[in-house]
Image 1 (cartoon, helix red, strand yellow):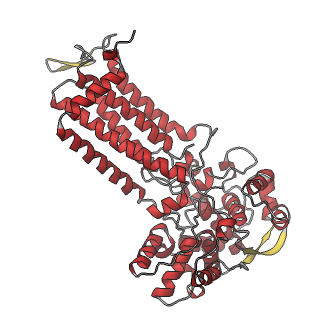
Image 2: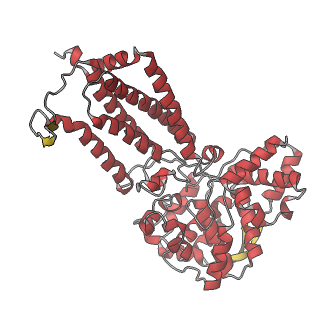
Length: 496
């Protein structure tokens, strides 16, 4: 028969009642929880904006990030309050409980971020370059942190409740100024909290290296169906027709044989690619199948109907085509080539014939570039931003960046000028991010009296206008000046 007084639940209950019978610990817990939540939010906006976070991630992922963040913040407040209560009552305590609480704070903070644009602390701690490297986009770290906090609270509750005897012997003791190590059957259990913390840290660092048997879909997909959504007023409709012209926008470049080359290389598995579109309700057209499987001399044209096809097609091309941007740029600054495998643009590409996606990373000069062409691509890419994060195309850590990099490389190889590449980038990103493009077009129309087609691509896609932070400032200007037309509700996720 279980003694109720020895049950973990009863110990928890008594420990909490004794601690919170003192009003100042209610204040302490609330103050700590609120500050931890502000800390989480501060870390989030170092990499993205709140609008971009809501726009890029699935509703389930957003909900779980918020719920687990709140629970972690509250439990950190409780754990620290109980630890302070132990100190206040001058009772012996294990410092491991404090370490567990601080460890939970650090790692739960590391997992706070956007599954597209990473998390601020994640690469700094050397866990991974992006939340995409984790099977559940970092939610598993927050959940494990919560369990560790519960254990830390339990350890403090045992002392506060007075229901568990405090060991008379300790592992480390001070005898006349000399530290002595006492290891016996009576003292070994005192190592349990420290062992739990060590196992927690080891498991967290192992997560990116574990086989991805199960993977949570954390990112929204952008589809042609969404892009073709209706508008709410004639003025809005007219502006959207300029941003996303129904007849499309033609680039100064042809497909050539990049489709067949990618199939041969294995960066695209033909059946997986076709199945992805069939499952999304947009099966590949015969023209798209021909682009994928045959040489095509047709000029590339992006339309509301094929923008999703081009996104994945050029994602694979940008990923596999040999490029100094991929091997010497920002992608390899956080852990080299191995670290580059943890971004959304690499870890998120699941349509290869087999093997690790990094086997195809900058694998082959599908379209060879001269040194001058490489410089041109790098210059243009460095000035072109996307609103799902604060990065330029020269840091293609998500699929939109990788796809646009591939398009720039193809255009440069076929002799396109710098201005042609900027203009192409303006229209392509406007098809992939129509809501942000609408806001930017509205901004230039009202502030500078320029129509969408009159704004040069370099300015339109600059850090001040089209990055996550630029888009946020544009939105603020529109609201502050009473310009609040609403485009179709759409987003640009970074998943296949």
